[in-house]
Image (tube, rainbow, N blue to C red):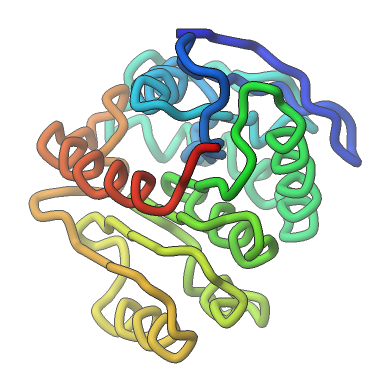
Length: 249
């Protein structure tokens, strides 16, 4: 396994990032992985390594690079449900500053970076997001339908909002196959129905699934929300999606 710490040029500076990919073989399908709200940290690096073991070049950028290199705040080693609101409150100004315009500029840079890496195969890429990263992943996929063939979001947030540019309004641009793994309570039944109807209207090949016995953040082992059975379900859905949509050359 090859591990790299990177600085990716963007319109607004340089994004620090983490990449993992196999030592064997010449080139590997690219996967852009957006973190949850807590950002790039050892948990996400472990996720990237595990995914890379299945034959992918996995890139995890620091969402908040405009503020500071990761970690942008001092995170506890374990985020309990009691601590979660305090940590989110500290990160909230950075989350609010991460506008759609910034998301799209960054997505351009991250996909361009993957395109020119000698270890990354030509052809489509996959985009994955956790928590708010799912909305970033969806915006990336709708902005780059010719590049992104797989989109996955787990315990997603901000997919259906009242904003005119809410991600669910953009699905007519989407060509990727999609899986969304929701935690119990992530969305109301009415919101899930609105999202599914938007997928259907757009003719998207998708699945939305509520993972039983979960709370928001279930994939993250450094939080109290962690659910190992749900994390395995996440792999059981994600790996076949990537396998059938991404091809090597």
